[in-house]
Length: 610
Ligand SMILES: [Mn+2]
Picture (cartoon, rainbow, N blue to C red):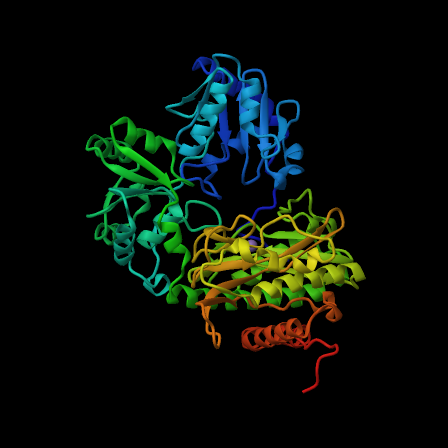
């Protein structure tokens, strides 16, 4: 009926290949005099989505999660994953080849200490490892009486004979009407913020923002994989495979920066090091290979939080109006999906994959969808209780009576979207209505929050949980993450979470997505994007901030228990739905418009009469 262009539901893992591949890797390690090797799920930029040729962890183990680490010694091997993947890993990976470990509860450093033999050489790829991680692994190896050793070339690449070549996606210039600030102005602003002789820009999202370029090198995020050097003064240099640049783009970029091939970066760093330069590196994304090259040549590497992330996070007016337009367009596609779903689901036979395909195809019908912003999370029944559930052909469930949760988003040139709706199929139980309403109360508490400038995401995280805490409940993920501007759907540094240490600044876009998960039964999440804005409050003694909600789609009233809500919360929901109806009605077909009137009706209940 519908099809998906941007997401495959194939089961990528094949546990049976792991044994042979690990044996081949061990032969290669022996040839190189190594006793072990670290295999992180990482590329040279520590990206969330990596090119196929960087999926070394998946190739070796079968594990397809977005984060993980394998350590292969000559006689044993372990796979470390976080709480999202403790169920998935044993299904995808041969347990006779790999032991499974929880990365937090059972950290890799302790495993290295326990199992690396005395005098053992543990190899790592410095292109795939940050300087901070190198220190951590080096301490663990030396605690075992062994040694951490950088490899010149990755031994997996020697045995992965059909490894895909690096991507060569064409680079495009991000239009000024969407970027709102010229690359020249951004470069100047970033240079002014620098406290060292220069900055190595290693996060490809930062490169994209700084030069106003976008690319097609990885799935779901329009990145051009590249590095850049930004000197404190003078011309920057962009290191990128020249085959990705058309003449027009090369001319445009040459006006801003020198352009070199990526392999020139090491030679340039050696030269800068020989001059005794002190350069800044981004702790989260810099490959240790670069700091090592600079330091070996006599330069100084300062590894810290990079300055560009904060500049990129605070969106300008052009980016914000783009985000509003993208979310409006996306909301119309979501509303069309919800209306379609309400007709299709009760008939039976609808599956999670079919629903995700329908939503993607409605987004494509806007004519402006460039990609989905991440693989849709579409879970029915018990699958909805897995917050990061990735549906595949083998896990696909029929959507039956109960709850269906769909978390999805789009990449449009004017903005990136991310929205979650939880939908009742048939009559929901009183418990589901109670939990949904508590999650909604948390969502509304964030949406309505006002707070002084300087407040961090961690300080307001509890607002989203209070109604759940009142009933002895909680959820085990952050309340919100930053969102890029036609960039990553997960962007820092701001977040609403226990670990959200960054002060919220006007222009930041964040998700507001509290949830509740009854393991094995059902899950709930309500997600809208919100923008930090200044708030005028009469008599205020401080500069105050609040949020503007920019995602527009109905929240399922069949799951709402109005008696649990305050008058202010009901007023917020009624006002939100009136706004959704007014904004989306002109953009949807007649059938969806009729559905929308019903889906955005005012709450009944003991509302004060006017
Ligand atoms: Mn999200």
